[in-house]
Amino acid sequence: MVSVFNEVLGREVVVPDRPSRIISLSPALTETLFLLGLEERVIGVSAFCAKPEAAKMKRKVGSYSTTNLDLLRGMKPDLIVAITGYQRDLSLKLSSEFPVYPITLPVSVSGIVDMVVKLGLVVGEAEKAWTLSGVLLRTIADTKPAKTKPRVYVEIDLGGPVSFGAYSYIVDSMHLLGSSTLFDGVRSEWLTPDLKQVASEDPDVIFYEAKMYSKFGQPDLERLIDKRGWRNLSAVRANHCFLAPGPLDFLAHHGPTFITETLPWLSGRLDYASERSNQ
Image 1 (cartoon, rainbow, N blue to C red):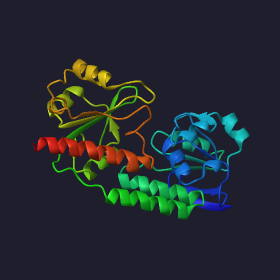
Image 2 (cartoon, rainbow, N blue to C red):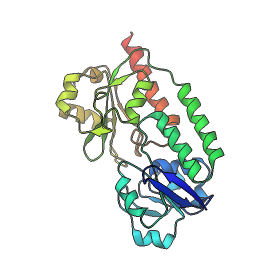
Image 3 (tube, rainbow, N blue to C red):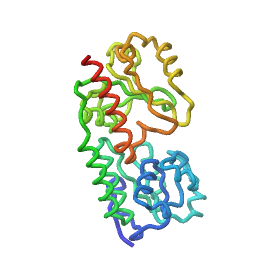
Image 4 (cartoon, rainbow, N blue to C red):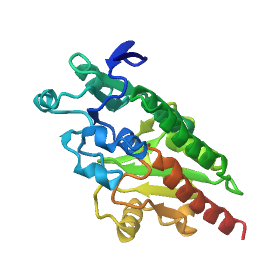
């Protein structure tokens, strides 16, 4: 057994040198564990852990903020990993009975890399984590900023419209890609956007992500634009309104594939918008 200090809890967490009964309550951490080749050591996940596809086959133990305590007791995990932010209170509650290691929610793209390394260290797989972090860092290094600096509005349907402030890896990714967002100056992770303000700001590019598992498609997005009276916005008139691929979280997912898949997708669409703006 080893004692690993956790800054969120403010104390050491005692875990096996290489935990073999891991429960992950975070989709991002579940994806990371699978990418580290540790799927056989994962015995339970949250209902929202759907990346990679094999994660769906693991036993479901709860949601983002709730879990079945009797089920956890019966499964006898030697490590439970979670993310802060929406899971902070749950982590604190579970830590009184189980070996819980909450990892800080990334506020930047580089923070996703840091998350990978921290998880690798606590599960006793530092070498694998360093290898994966190297792949992610090289992907970031190869990312090129857009030729122009478009102003971007990002919205995700999380039961209502949600956008993002300065404390978000999504906003950080936009700056990495050479753009800015409408709410850069808001010092929070997320916010409920004033849709009239969005219209008055007249963004050059809009990224929209529908609710997870919904059948929302491009015709639905067009209807939403009409309902909001956004047909005359610059982004809409220029055909720079992009629907994130579904049905799983894409922008809202802060696992390693945000860097290897989402970042290139965003880059391609910002390049497209920049090239058309220069014509």
